[in-house]
Length: 438
Image (tube, rainbow, N blue to C red; front, side, top):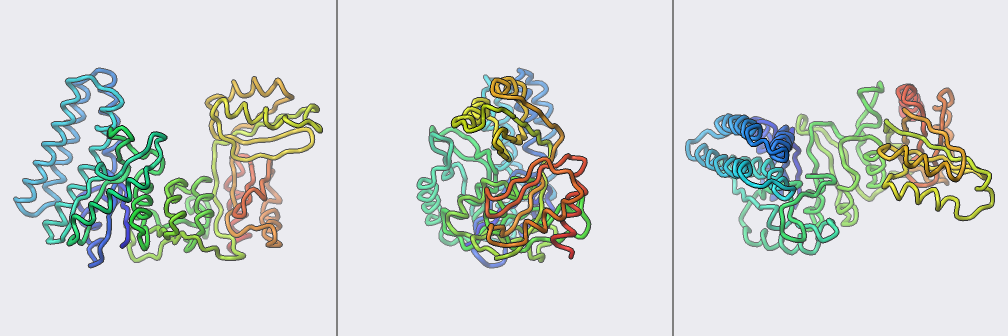
């Protein structure tokens, strides 16, 4: 069995829903994970904001606007009066629930229920449409099997057990439709998976059912070896190791969230990235297999701040780095890159919320300098240190670019360069020419 996930833009209109229905009805049994229709979650956040501000009139105005939009979708999606009526009944139930929150106390608990309505609407609409087309489709409510534990981490044994029960209860179905993103927490309350959203749901479900493959369908043509909006002559990457994909995702590739592929990685289930706008395209396969001796891609991460702490006290002094790291830990600020010398340490961060407090505490231990508007350029591939020559090619490509920091050896899959944001385009193009176009 395969698990397929479609994002908000893939089900963003009645026609897109029909296109998805064609894609998934190929005779194979599968579980299909759907996001909310594009724009819906943002509107639900807007409704919640009005309710938190105790402005029910503002909330009702947005609710009415969203309901009218969905009524139009229902009329366009269904061709029979029977299923149009089913669709309208669905809207009545969901939007009456939303309006009920304009009259009562509104807390974070109610907000999570409001935010879940987008996925509940899109999945039911697609399920009804498939049934109208004569497909044996069953809706599996994610709230019946997707749960997090008291640490807000997915409760994998529970998910596996409850999902198996639901599949066994519907043995004749061709297609199982379920919601991404939403779940219940350890106390039975409606909640969401936060990190990775629907991609995370698909990965958890794939691991739970031991799927043959997990497919992530978006409106982007897989991962490229560079950003095609910035660099000339880019091409799709056809295969990545899970670690390579995680590096690319963290360092700027918007197509996949790093945490969402962890369950698939540990269960050894390949993940394929595919394009709903071009279903015949090969896409990108992510697995535990490494293509030896190959550079795969280059990615960039902007809005980086570099901090350098220089102190003679660091020379031969144990405990210095611990004190520095404890400051970042205190302010819950992650470090991207780190380089050390005998008398100094340089780090980069992307979260500057507590920058001033961090700098004040660091000055107790040495002289601190800060560089703003920096960018991390990450070269990803099979970069084990025994592979002679790859780092030399990357360094040669950067020969005309001022480099603030270099990180190599922390991972077998990347070399990272910290440069000024104004040098980003030149660095990416030079690396692309040197690594892929020679």
